[in-house]
Image (cartoon, rainbow, N blue to C red; front, side, top):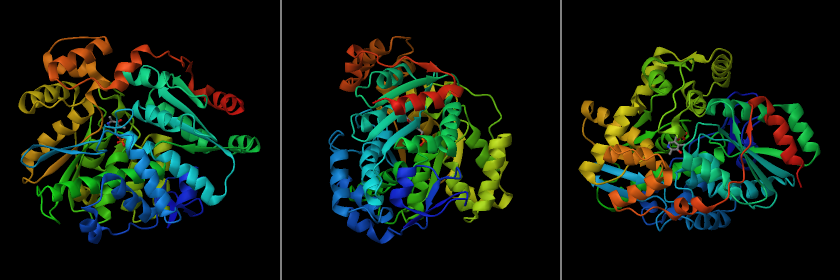
Length: 492
Ligand SMILES: *Cc1c(COP(=O)(O)O)cnc(C)c1O
């Protein structure tokens, strides 16, 4: 299987090269040459466990990877989760929650980032790369910790994470800044997530800078969802959830269902759309944004306009104005005309804005429903949902539930799977207040009170943060990132 750049300015690569590089030389994202049809394989997948389903889906794209080694890596990665990596919980007729937060760092990013170290190492082996790999990662909160956890103490790899100073939740910051390991580095950047992401992308495509590091035997890769190695494992849980519903006789084989996805960088929901293209019976993907609703407007009007106020919300992992993975959707919408996509991305970089045609906008509405949920509504959803189902939502998942509620009013009734992307304990203060109306600003006290209220135990990963020393306190300007990367690369 070959991988092309969405911007057409780079040679086709195999999966190993696409994953090791992370992003194409021309700044585009790698996309697979085709989408393997798995509709005939669903029956076969019913009897597999999560790790086997993941290996099965991955193997369709990662053709040069050894299948047995891939299976073993999936087995290992998903053994780090609670007993089931991605359980589907039934709350009501036609209402299901896909819990993706049972991994080491309590967010859905773990599904891909527990596996990415293997995909990268095997990818290097496959193409004969012996250099040290430097992972650069911009994070809106959850990718950072999941990547640090996945790559810490891995031989031949260093990882550097950039997060927006003042733009992540307290637990997220503590999780990142207490990470152990000699090969990790965490830096707060003045600005928001988009500033971090743009700065990292710039380093990735700076040929002079890359050459300089290459001379020292270091190459770059990315743990962001720009990397196909991040995206690919995420396709698997859409298939897995569907299979679980068929096995439980909640739906019939072939019946179409909806998925509601809390969306920021458009990676999670894009994986769902890829699953649909691979033959999974999906009706619509519900694209749920918080107050940073640039995607809602895009799906409504066909105009993507990032020139707007940036809001900090209680769902910080979705506080994003430039959703990188949308580029992969645009590429398909442009019927794989890379020049057309490159043109739009150039406009986006230059003016913060691009648009698609009316016909393309209409096309999108067949597969997507998009809306947003503001802060007040998000809090109400958490409170009401708890009252109705005794189920505690985190603020990101609540955004998806809020948007789904609006969708359900105007569409025919069919089963929906809401993707739950984080444990509520990562955002305990906001969740506790939404459930009880009481304020508790200390994150740990809030977690304990939330445990008392809900009866769900505080995860040990949260509990143990209290006593861990904070190792990283650096705050940098975005202009200084290159120098910091160089210094870290030189560190023995
Ligand atoms: C990253 C993240 C999201 C958004 O996912 P994208 O792939 O960026 O759209 C939603 N919720 C949580 C908790 C996240 O960590």
